[in-house]
Image 1 (cartoon, rainbow, N blue to C red):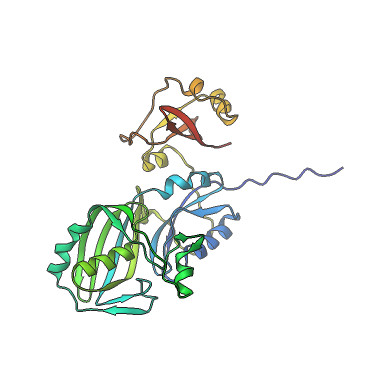
Image 2 (cartoon, rainbow, N blue to C red):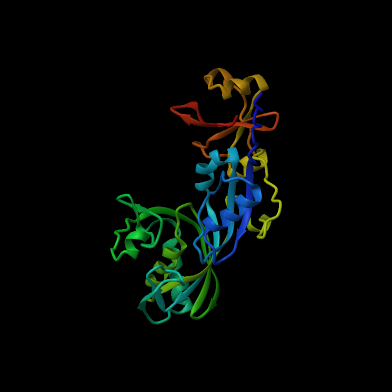
Length: 301
């Protein structure tokens, strides 16, 4: 008689990881995968090789939440080197422009131009796809990719320190913002050139770097996706019975399940915010509103 193979349980949850400078985000994931014993692991926002700080990592079924984590706002401390601009806008690139150093006053005066809703031109050396190819691959092959400006939002931009030719800036921004581009544009607006020499990500949504674990990892503990994490994402939530949860897992119509159930929240969510559904503290699904009705976003078995 053949033995029935036991179904392997894949660890599921969230891990806050402090990536060090000098390794890629992909390499950082490799160590986490080995520590957790699974390949079903992903981060929710790349950090460049020279950058360091917070990576929000999801494993197992929690990977279904990637799209919502990826859209979170972020906070950084960036170190700008004025006087020299590199082709990659970071310390690993080749110098392509030089210019006089700006004064502190000149830099301070232009920061207001980069607050609120702005259009930003991403770096040529980035993972953005142009006609099916990465812009960075095109740039390395000698082409000059046309980088279309994209809307981003800067919640707060502050000059944290000034030590010419270096300056440190604090940035609270929307997803999709390139701090390398921000450094370039600030310098040009101040009559100079610059590139980023250091970048530290300190926060993603409400997740803080100070709560992150560091390498080497021995037995990392994943945080279950509970109401505290959902609240940090800014989502409200419903609570359903186990019978109702089973119906949702089987894809039954949400109108008859959620009906007039109250929507719980820690903070006031945006009008178009998704909502989580819990049963006995376990996450059942993420639902989204479409034409005034709740629709399935993703379901957890």
